[in-house]
Amino acid sequence: MTSGGHEAANGMTGRDGGAALEPIPGSPVVILVRPQLADNIGAAARAMANGGLFHLRLVAPRDGWPQERAWRTASGADRILDAATVFADVAAATADLHRVFATCPRPRHIVKPVLTARGAAAELRAVAARGLRAGVLFGPERAGLDNDDMAAADTLVRYPLNPGFMSLNLAQAVLVVAYEWWLADDQTPPRALMTNETRVARKVEVDNFLEHLVRELDASGFLRNKAKRAGMVRNIRHFFERGEVTEQELRTLHGVVTELAHGRGK
Amino acid sequence: MTSGGHEAANGMTGRDGGAALEPIPGSPVVILVRPQLADNIGAAARAMANGGLFHLRLVAPRDGWPQERAWRTASGADRILDAATVFADVAAATADLHRVFATCPRPRHIVKPVLTARGAAAELRAVAARGLRAGVLFGPERAGLDNDDMAAADTLVRYPLNPGFMSLNLAQAVLVVAYEWWLADDQTPPRALMTNETRVARKVEVDNFLEHLVRELDASGFLRNKAKRAGMVRNIRHFFERGEVTEQELRTLHGVVTELAHGRGK
Image 1 (cartoon, rainbow over the protein chains, first blue to last red):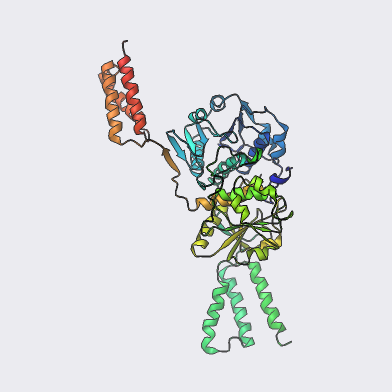
Image 2: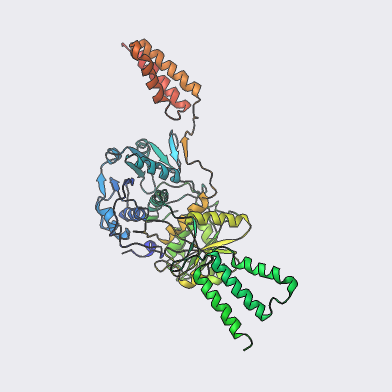
């Protein structure tokens, strides 16, 4: 499924081998301009799949197309490569598109709107919502897009990254756009309690546990100092009320208290 | 500087060879747990540098440390590798930290706060602002973090990506966190007009050009239909007022109009 080493999955995988990969309506076209290495084309396809991009166009790939090596680095994103199309130049590859974005790190002598990757993702979603078709140009390894390529674009995309060290390979450059495109329509809450098989407890359940705990602490004599009792109970309560607790955790805690109390004096 | 192929720079480079790489105060520690391939350690360092991360810790790297291959894939992020430290286990690697995040794609049977990469970046910035030190665990290639690793973390990080195909390599997983961490403090406007040597024109300059144009169009007879003149002028105005125009563009347009008018009848 994956090639070795660099392309290993880091356990960050939820893929089904890519069999279910299909175009998402409105997803932009990724256009690799004069890519040199088939490895990178495959890695770019893999990066696209992570963000739900599907349409891949190749402008004058140096070593021709198809190249078997691309499928080896695609990590299962075969369908994207199977459907990829080849064009002789940027004009042909963008002829049917309404909007063309070009990724470039430090445009000079160019007067054109420039978006961050996040801004570009929002714009790509907005363009798609109007029924228009957009593409994003990525330049060749090392050299990047030339001035003629850039002139074919109506919008530039520039990633705001460490100006003292900006060095993305082709697949990483594609990944940033794919990632932002996916997130531009993602509803995942930025913070949640992962509960899986259980559920977040209601306050009454927390109160029931606290009553159980305090009852046993009274019985054990831990709260025998009447003057300090209220403050101690409040501190204990603050600890168990710090954020969300699950129903399963409360059952465990009930068990811990019962066991400790039952074992007392043995 | 870079190794070939996969690691080529795609022209997305602004680096100075990494000579200027230095720790940014408050930046979190990246902790690679049992990484297998030195190539991936180097690529992770490169990914870190893009987002201004500097502190790298390695837990029980399979092939020992240092490994010359890592420097070859780091694309100049040598200082990060030079400063990397090795630990026997996760407990030792996290002992001095106040907060430990763990990246994992699909946590099961775990009850813990789970953040998106973007949510994690905001939290990491907030933690740093309180003077606390945080680290992020990344699991070994393929296997990912095991349950004991995850238990050492107080917070999980899960990237919201295409559930039908999520497959990031180690360096890409690191890049997403580094990218989000950098952007969490980035002020780049999501949309701007790239102007470089020129500047955005003031409305009076646009008006001056439009007066010039209309004067010549009147002289040429293009606006001779009195009934339609106002509407035609308005349409032309709408075209040239569509968004920002630069002072340089206006000078060019003045020249175009003058040349066309001057050449008329020749």
